[in-house]
Length: 147
Image 1: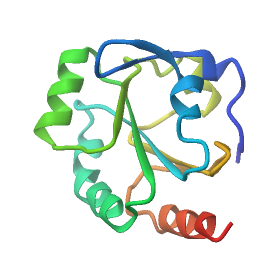
Image 2: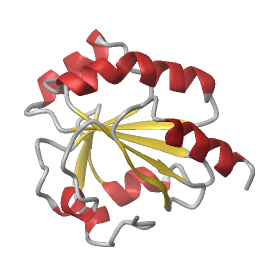
Image 3: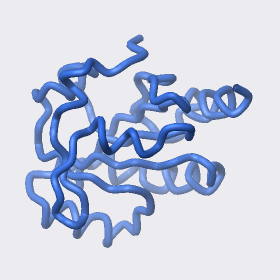
């Protein structure tokens, strides 16, 4: 299990909802001191959509956790429409259908949805979950709260 993102992976670009380009490092740095659930997803992904109810339940149970979504949609219009259609609350970024980019490769991305839990220092506490209701996700969040 990896506990840190390689420096090169953090330099991959994201686009925020306002259309601004930002590095993954910059995006994640704004959550220092907080527990983060990072969700890699896409609107074309059936398993991602099936997980939304469990994801919303997880969000309701953990209002102190920052939910950050990295969309792997094929275009920004589909991404923005999906956020609205499924009423997904949290921080949203678009990374494009970039499975083999430096970031995707660094986390061995082989399936979405993919959930990672980051600790208060931005280190990876739960490296690999593919279901929002995986007990390991909540257990990791609970453990980090005790830190």
